[in-house]
Length: 107
Picture 1: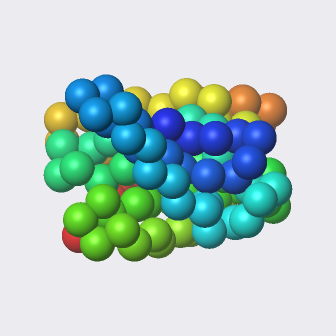
Picture 2: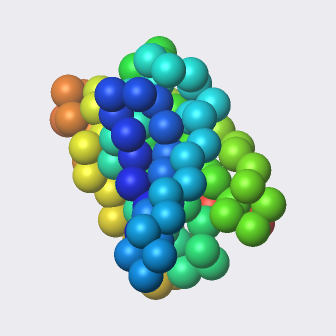
């Protein structure tokens, strides 16, 4: 189970079978305020950073433990929720700018 730690600026994974927690600092730093999170079918973990301007989308590759990030063109407000679709798209609820964003991931 992956989760974003808004207060500290981390992405984390909790393994309920062992109780182990592993953490990675979000690329935007301690004030990045990671929020909405989803996992696509290819196993990539996606989340938004609400504390950077413009807000960013972050992709985390668990196999390589590597991050990639890009700005959200509208700024995004705060992306509190996102959903992954079977075709690999992400739909973002961009609070504060009254928009829905769509991410089409490139390999």
